[in-house]
Length: 262
Image (cartoon, rainbow, N blue to C red):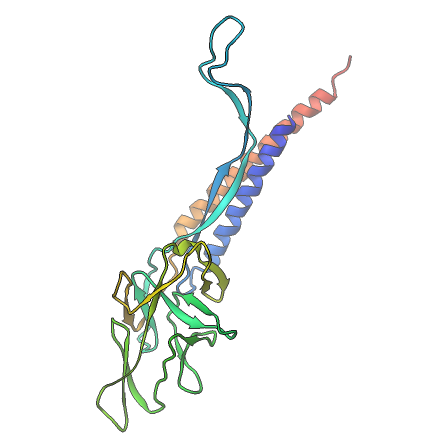
């Protein structure tokens, strides 16, 4: 009876984590470049009271074992890096990655972080920066008198100025790719850090070695599907309720046992 209580409790903890994950997905439905998460579960250890092929008293052999599980546990929150919905902005500094890859940005401490959010701005000195103020890596400087900015699908950044109508290249986007993107460590602000699970980055120009190409004037929206998340929330809620019923049933049975009299 006690085993049923603990088993159902483990199910409640697991479904609570799933609800938390769904809530975070829904909260970021309008976050540029956000990638949804999915919780994966694993059953726990089994207590075996009769092994398969064990001999029985009448000389027969048990064809199947008697084993009771002890519940469930979450083992990962997988990040799903499917392409998000393109959103047209007509802003020349907004860039979307069409395919695989991450923009590189340099944090205040000098470390490199990675992002799919291509909503770039100009700093006071003309450098391309993220909405959080982090500089693009490699650094790109836009002339103060730039009249137009053109970003090619291969990542080249060209400008014309009031004093020079001839197109001149001022920089180049580079994209990072990982063997296991799902292993990247999320650190907030639409940023990820390299980890032992993700492996080291391979940096190339857009469109090379499997990296995606760039599209100017668009940003990549979140890949969260509201309907899918609502269905997942309902399923998790019902599973949570079922586990509470298991606890109530086990409690009722214990109450009956405690009420027995000699």
